[in-house]
Image (cartoon, rainbow, N blue to C red; front, side, top):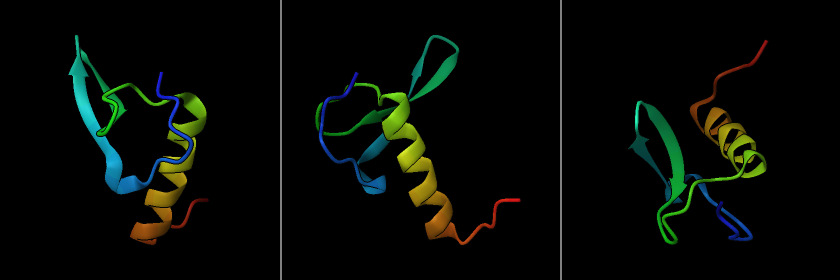
Length: 53
């Protein structure tokens, strides 16, 4: 898991591991933790302007 203190949405890369797409940090190439992924998802939704119901 990635131990980087802050991950911005532009630093996330998606890699195929087996048959699963895994978000990973571009600098350390480690998969994101669940906490980092939820933060990334919130930033991305906010950037795209999608309202969640």
